[in-house]
Image (cartoon, rainbow, N blue to C red; front, side, top):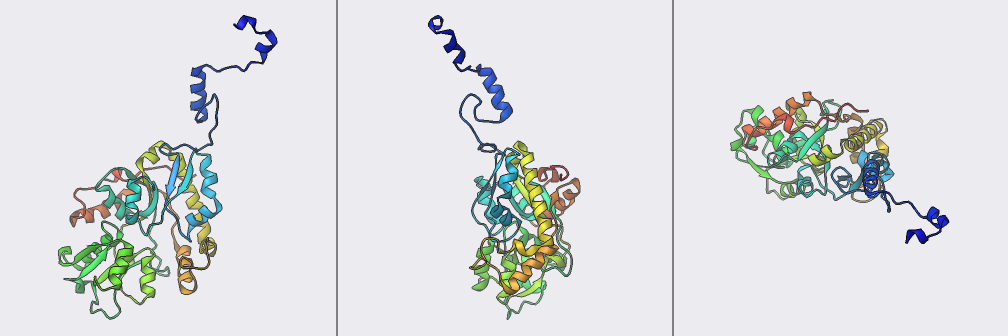
Length: 348
C-alpha cells in the first residue's frame, strides 16, 4: 500500500514517535503523555503533587497567600498545586482530615503531633518556630475558670473536671502544671474535648476549668473567664510546628520546601506590617475582628517567631513533650525524634 502513495504525500505525513521515545519524553517532561494530549505542570494527583491545606479563615499568612494565590504560583515550579479544604479549630480537630488525606500539610504543636504518632507513623514535622517568651506579647493560651469560681490555684483543681484537647497542647500544659505543683495527675479528672466542645462545656458549667488554646483563649477571656495560669508560666518545651503526611515529604520535598519558603517570607512581612494580614477576606461579620480583639491579633503577629526547617536540636523538644505524655500514660510507648522529624535542609 505504501508504494502507491505519492512521494509528496509521504513527505507531509506526520512522524510517529516510537513507544520507547514517548515513555522517555513523558518521564523527562512530567506530562501525562508525550505523544498527544496535554497536562498542566503540577496537575497530577499522586503523592506530593497536591499540597492540601485546611481553610485558613480570615487572618494570617495562609489566608493572605490564598487571597493573593501565592502558593498557586510558587508551587507550579515544583510540579505541585495547592488545594484548600475545610475549616478546623486546632491540630487535633484536623486529625480525621489528615487520616483521610483531605489535609496533608498542617500547623500545630509538637504535643498533638506526638499524640497522633502514638497510633501511626504517617506524619512528620518538617518546620518549627520557637514559642514566644517576650512578656510584652499577648498570651495565646490559658487555664481558665469562671469569674466566680472558688478555684484559685492549680492545687484547687484536685477532684475537679478540667477540659483539655486529648493528647494535644491543652492536655500537655495541664499535665506540666500539675507536675510543677506536685499534684498527681490522677487526682484531676481530664475531660477530653476539642476546642468547640470545650467552649460549650465550660459555658454550661459541665467542667470546672478549661485549658483554652488558639482562638478559643481570647474568646473565652473576652467573655469574662478568669485565668489561673498560662503556658508561658511553665517550663514549656513545646514548639509551634508544621507537619506533613510522610508520602508527601518523600515524593516531593521540593514542594514542601516551597510551601515553607512562602510561609517564612509572609511571616516576616506580617511581623513588619501585621494589619494587612487581618480581616483578609471580610472586614464585617463573625470572622472579622475589630476593637480590642483586632489590636490583640495585631500585637500577636508582631511578636510571632518565623518558622524554620527542623534540625537535630529539635529532637530534645520532641523527647521532653513525648516523655511527659508517656509518664502520664497518654502515650503507650516512647517516641523517638527520628520517627517524628523530617529534615528538609536550610531555607533558600
